[in-house]
Length: 295
Image 1 (cartoon, one colour):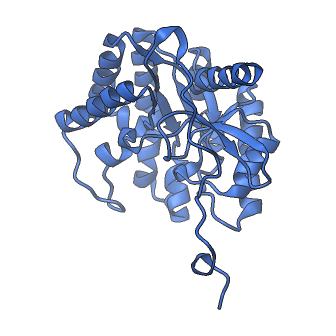
Image 2 (cartoon, rainbow, N blue to C red):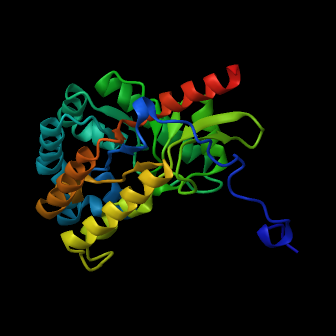
């Protein structure tokens, strides 16, 4: 019989223990990480290479640079919010001035692959290339060495997690298996990056983008706001973190922009929510780990 998962004793996908309940800074009850995945046209090219010549399909991603990101940066500045932008290397090379504007506005720029290729088991060299080319683009275009990583398509494998640790990434934000940050445990038993887990309810792609390759019914603003407020309110009760997965080609569109800004205003009105970048959240978690070890 072939050696596959059906022939072995079941094992949990995550070796790390449940997240510790460290306190949030300054008496806050929970955290909110406003985060944007800047895919540009790379997400459409990764989906189908023929899209290089399908200019209308590519224009979905092109909207980010023309309208979406400038509008989002304007909204964040008005609210004095700093966010995390997970940027593909392709977007950096195609739209360098736009990506420079993100950094100049004081936001965190983090790694999101190069071509937005999904990490797949066995494709170690492709994953290594995605990681290295993305790092090179960050350094070459922005002069930045990112500390955070979000996997394209929100997927990851053990080899890639080890690569992140080897390259001293502080944190990842891809997993869906907890409500609070935790420290990864690698297959070799060593400590890996901190994970700021994602709440899939806050991925705007499923609510606000439809396309002939993936047609879906768009959800009205009231429905999305109801979901987001309920998730945020209960996360506050549990003392967790909301890590958003917003896309400028969705939340930079008029209706998506209205939903995003209304939610951010709601979060700002709740004085016990710590609104922070991924780096801020991860460094706070690391400081709490250090304090726990010293006591």
